[in-house]
Image 1 (cartoon, one colour):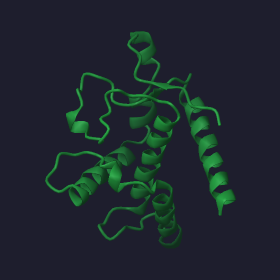
Image 2: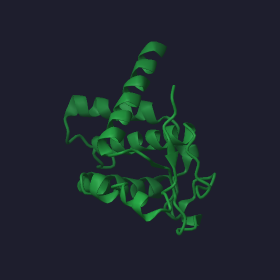
Image 3: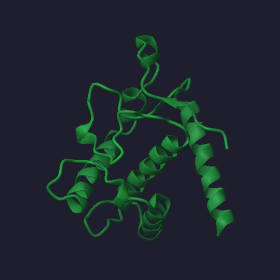
Length: 161
């Protein structure tokens, strides 16, 4: 399987401006981004009460299974189906999809010296880039790659069962 090229944000100003983090992601999905961010807060309070917001990866290892369970709840009960904590299953599905994508990009060779091994983002020097940012010509090229990889993972899951 080919790897996805990844790197921290480029230092060159012209190159940095080619990555539409706000206009190509946040502005497209502001409500969804806010919902997933709120879920991160809720999950942190559930799994790490009283601690600063961070992703404890030791408590989150079954992204695809959890994602599919949330999708099943949506398929059975509709788009407004909520989990026991009142959070939409679609929101939890999105969080799990982002978690799986993050891990897949890291596993594909993306390196990030600023990301602590334990996942404690509050300990990161905020002046450094904090995650792999992909180098694609535009968001359509990135989205096509994400869809291709998702289909590939779905095929692999079907073949394994």
